[in-house]
Image (cartoon, rainbow, N blue to C red; front, side, top):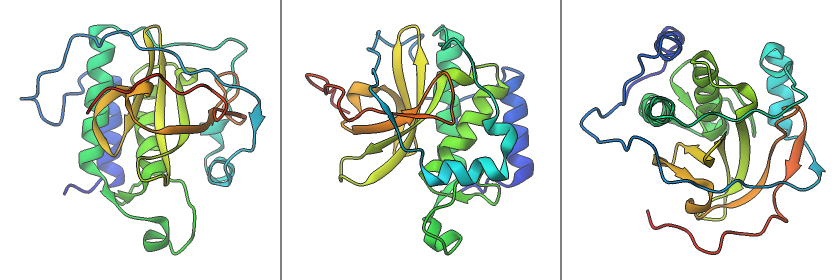
Length: 211
C-alpha cells in the first residue's frame, strides 16, 4: 500500500487544485453525474468532538473560517469526477491504523503525513484536497456516524445542489447519505465549522440502496 508522506500529500493537493485529479483506478467507469439524492437536515447544536478541538489548536487556519450563508457544491460532471477521484486516491494512499496503535493515545485528528491514519485523518486529507481544488469549505462537513457494526466512524459529507453525498474510507463509491446504511450522529454546522449539530433526531431514510 502506498504511503502518504507529506510531499506526496502536497503533490496530490496541487494536482487537485489544478483540476488534474484522476481516479486511482482509471479503468473504472464513472457516471457523468449521480441520480439526485436528498439532503440530511439537522436539529439542535451539540457537543464538539474533542478531536476537532485539539486539531484546531494545532491547525488554527483550518478552523478559522465561518460564513453567514451556507454554500453548496454545484454538482457537474467535472465536480462529480473530482469527488470520486479524491475519495479513491486518498483511500488507496493511507494505511488504516488506530490512534492507539499510531500515537498511543485514544483520539488524535491529523493529516496522515506519514501515510498512516484512522477515519478522521482520511476525512481531513480529503477535505483539504477538495478545498484546494475550489470546493467551498462550507459544503464539506465532517460527520460522525455509527457504522454497520454500530461502531463510531467519521466520514466527509459533501452538500451539493443535488443532495448530500458521503466520502468514506470504508467505501470506494461516493454514495448518497441515505444509501450508506449508517446511523448519523452529528456533523459540523455549515455556518461555522467549530459548531456541531445533532443528526440523531432526523428521520432515517425509508430505504437504503444496496451496495
